[in-house]
Length: 98
Image (cartoon, rainbow, N blue to C red; front, side, top):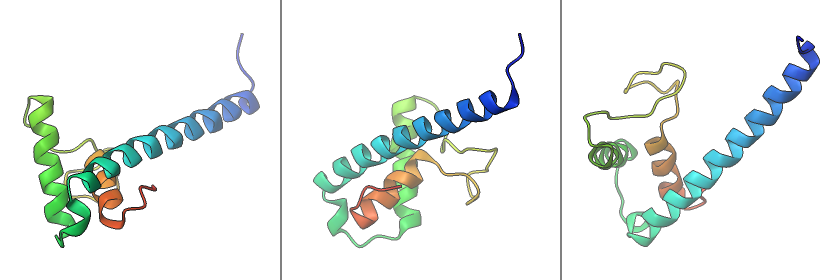
């Protein structure tokens, strides 16, 4: 049986909230780790910091990927938010919010 469009919209809204919560938790976790490592005290360009995070992510993934972009964004695009960019933003302002 097909779901009515209103039910599908409700489900999408619920899933978007879950995604937002998960991204916030991940950003806060990475931000806390970055602050413990002293990144909050270092004056570094956000682009350089993001590149360093991408290098670390690639090392732990075990392959040459650089970003985990969304919506088909390229590595240099601001259209997608990468996990490393979120981490860099959380480390830079110390708030840990997305």
